Length: 386
Image (cartoon, rainbow, N blue to C red; front, top):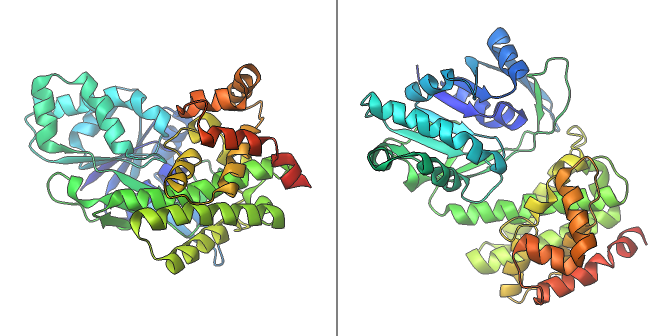
C-alpha cells in the first residue's frame, strides 16, 4: 500500500491534507512531537472530521498511524514513503529539515530509486522551496546529487479554515466544507500522484497570491479589527457592519492589484471575494480572532498578507486606504499571550510605528507606505469605534 507521511498532526494536518491523502488510498503516518496525539492516533486508528456549514456532515478518516517526529522511527517511515506533506507552520520547517535530510540519506544508502515528492502545505509563499533550502544544508555533494535526481519539492497553496474546536476526542476536528489545494505541476519528480482534492496548476504564483491577497488579507484584517472592538470570533467580527465594510473594501483594493498583475476577470474576482467573506460568516466555525491574528510580526513581513498587497497596489497606483487601515489595526494588536504581539508593542514603544515596521518589513523608514501607515495607525480607533 502507498504510504504518506504528514508532518504535523494538528488541526490542518488531520482536517485537510492528511484526510485527502487517506481518502486517496494512502496509509497516512502522522508525524508530530505531541505524544498524546500520536498515542491516540495509534490507539484509535481513526478520527472524525465534522464538516460544519449550511449542511453539516461527518467523515471518518482511517488507515492511519502515528510516529514521534523527534524519534529514530521516523527515518524508516521516510525511507518507505511515497509522498511527504507538512502542516507544521512556516517557522517550524527548519526544525524538521534535518530529520527529512537524514531520511533522504537513508534512501540513498539503501540505493532506492523511487521518486519522492515533499510538499510543504503552509501559509507561506514557496514553502516547499524554503524547506528544500533548509534540507540541503545537511547534505553532502553526493547526497545532493541524489536529491536532485529523485526528490521533488513542489510548491503549493492551501485554503481551508480549520479552527481549534475542542471535542471529547482530541483527534476529531471541525472544518468548513470549502477547501482548495493548488500544487505546481511541473515541480514533481516522477509520476504525479493521483490525490483527491489536489489541483495541478502551471502558474502557481497567481493562485498563491490570489489566496494570500484575499483570504489571508481579509482574515487577518477581520481579526485585528475584531480584537480592537472586543469580539471573540471571526464571525462576530465580520457581522459588525463597520468591520465588514472596511474588510470588503480592503479585499477589493488587494483584488485590484491582482487584476492588474495577473489579468484576473474583475467580475469573477469580486464573486470570489464575496465567497471568502461568506466563509468568514460561517457561525459553526467559531474561529478565534486571537488564533487568526497570532504572530503579527510574521504577518507584517513584506512578503506576507498585509504589506505585500499594499506594495503591489502601490506599484499599480491603486488606492489602498483600507489596506493601510488594516495594517494600522495590526500594529495595535496587544495580546499578552502572544509572544510576537509583546515583541511588536515593545518595538513600537522603543522605535515608534515607522521605525518598528521598517525593521519588521525591511522597508526604508522614509518610505511613503510607512508614513501613510503611521497616519492610519493613529486613526484606527476613531474610525472603527466612532
